Image (cartoon, rainbow, N blue to C red; front, side):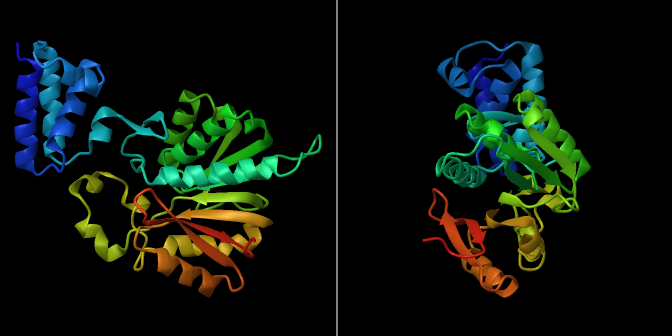
Length: 300
């Protein structure tokens, strides 16, 4: 039987030759997935023997990664906001940058709930996550609010144009015990006649059409619909901006994830489509533009 170290060396060599950007990490994650151990445990026991069956499964996983398939799809899960989510080809793999969107949405909702006592019987804060994909933003937000004891004061809707993505999102909501607090709908942006929302969060496609071909090979396994943002990368986001006057409450806020090079472009797009509205761009941990905060008028 091969040892952990021997299999990792073999896997790293194959992945390096195939052009993987992170051959060592990929090999460790895949071996840990096959054996059922955390990556740290794999690293800590290099001389441990691995059964022939597990070694064969590992080599199959390495072959899939050699072909470009993302590690998250091979493992069937991805960590996001401290939670583990099921992922597959039905939806985009969650990116760490999107955690900033959830942080800002949580802060906005908490501020609204704590700014003044809410009268008994007051309606919940209406929140919508547009382009939910595998549901990570809505579910992570619900989990965070639940920890604060505030989830009962919020009504969440999650939408996606893909029926398959919505099915995956529902599965993840059940797994995280928040399925009863989130409504899901298949819709192009928003269903008709759903009322107005105090908080809108959206992670819509924002990759420029001419940049699609230059994306890492792994993205070819993900739904193109979830990546391609049209000629300037803002065509889908622009359609949502057009809906905000009717679907965003008077004092509502829209939080829109954008590409790291779209800070100036989104400000210009909001000014063009929504005269008199304000747009402030929030940065991510890498100090890149990441979330556009759009509202009817600037707050002090």
